[in-house]
Length: 243
Image (cartoon, rainbow, N blue to C red; front, side, top):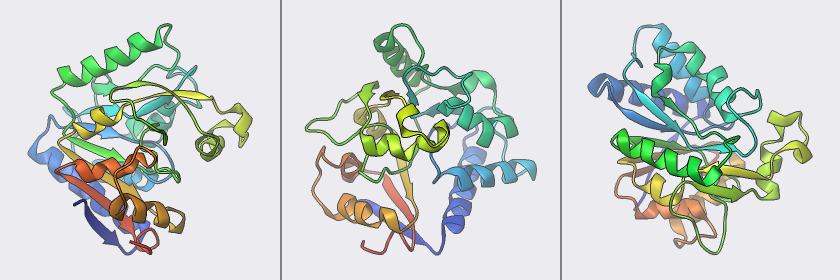
């Protein structure tokens, strides 16, 4: 069963997770981290930056892989997830550029780009800790609800709800959000040695209840975390209201 930890607030969750990751990096400097984007992890990244600034964590040998990227955007686009990560984390800590990995949404051959990413993860020895956010429809990464899920990194079509959720990056215009993205697949995510999903706010409560207590179904991709031997769900009190 997925382990659930409830924190008094979103900030308390972010602080606890940042300290946990900093401790793991101290123990294993070559830790391989899988990282999400979105509003929920921003306080976590802010806390990691604070710990780094205070000399509490050294990222120089850490490797990262981000979950996903929009099709059509390269890392130089200010709306890309790479730019998001630079703004909120990578520009403020000492992680080596060569150890930071992203999908290139502007690659000429997207299938080849997805295969390249899978090879890079394997060469790094796999992901030690995968941090996940949670979409309101139960998606993780850009693995959207469907009749079947794709195992490995792939090109995917985004739902209207997901595009609305990302509109802030595109001038609050849902119509400007790309209709497709590249994403790690469910098997890629589940092969991480440890998975920590974070969710905050009352809007996530129903989805948390379904993913923890409901059936494993591709209609709710996050429910597949029930199959992972070392998966944790970290929530604030609001998100835990229906657990």
